Every structure is written in structure tokens, then in C-alpha cells.
Image (cartoon, rainbow, N blue to C red; front, side):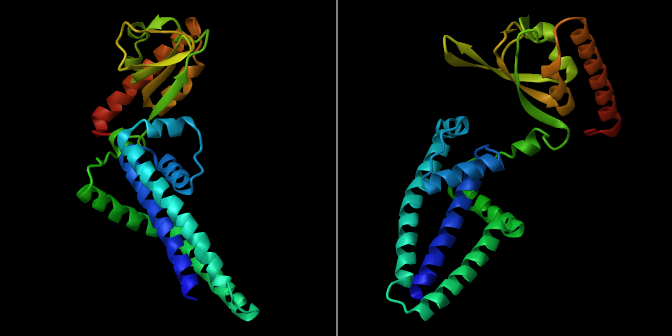
Length: 257
């Protein structure tokens, strides 16, 4: 029975470590889903190769967190499997059945612990306070800072040939009049990706570019569909009028829509 309890404690330790890793990655600016996936991948040693993974390991703090998770995961998994085997070694059929029963009960409790939103909220709060106090990880709640739950969003827009955006300077597009800010542009140059941060008004948008934009969610949703020509110009004017109405409403209400 001692080996069984040890195994359950190892599993509990694994859940807590992954949770700590998730919160730590989230505190560096990753979304909850991405942070959780990357923490679980690193701890389990799966090592998914995705653009998100490259984005994570390019950040020095995130890379350090991932390295620690990988180290703890490799040791924890091996210990858990060894302990599980020892649980049933030398046991009679009756003892094995009893231990399997308690193993199942223990795993169900741990599953509830891992899935409980209440436990997650409380544990995340404790972990965040501890990381703030004992580490140099800075906490940025990007959802709150950018108003992502209040009608605004960040979107990546792929510029296609024939798009209203293509082959025009940012200054001429006047996206700011629609309430849209262009934060960055990703561009392929000779097969290599180039990053243009905070592009200026004289930056020309070319087909194949990926624009990172911030603004009203409904406007950004329709922007990639806007075609070059009079129809696209009319849609731009309609979006400008809509943004002016939105600004007037914010002035009157003193807040968001």
C-alpha cells in the first residue's frame, strides 16, 4: 500500500508542477490555452514542433521554465512508472484487486483535482502570488490591458492579391480612422521571414504580408474580405462612420460599447 500511496503522490506532484508551469508561462504573456499545452508538452517530453513552440523557446524566461519542466518531467515519469510496478509486485490476486480498486479511487480524486475550476482558480492565485514574490517574472494580464473581452481583439491578417490592403502605404489606408492599429507586419524576403515592428505610415503593404492588427473585433473580422476598388473604398467609409458613432457613444457613456 505504501508504493500505491507513493505513486499517487507522484501523480499529484506532476499535476501541481504542470499547473505551476502553466501559470508561469501565462505570466510571461501567453494565453491560458497555449501556456497549458506547452507546459504539458514539456513535462511529458512529447515536444510538439509548432510555431507556438518556436515562439515560446525564443523567449529566455519561457525557455528556462520549459527546461525545468522537462527536467522534472523526465524524473517524475520514470519514478511514477517504477512505483506503479512495485505496487503489484509480490501481491496475491486479492491484494492486487484491492490495490487496483484504491488506485482507481485515487486517480479519480486526482482527476477531479486537476479538472476542478475552483481548485484551478485558487491554486493559480497562490502560484501567481508566490512567483511574483520569489521570481522576476512580470505579470501582464493582456486580456484586461487590451480590452479583449470588451469588443476589441488582436488579429493576424494575410494580405492576398486583389485585397483592398495590397500595394498601398499604411498612411493611405487610414486604418486608424476605423479604430485599427497596425502593430507589426511579417514579410517573406528571399524565403526568410522578416519582422517589421510598429510599421510607419510610409510602409507599403504587399501581397503575402501578414499584418498584426488591434482594433474592434467586427471591423477586423471584415477587413481581410475587403476587395480593391470602389466597393472596398465604400466599406472603408462605412467602417469609419461606424467607428465615429462608437467613439461618440463612448464619450457619452464614459466607457466601452
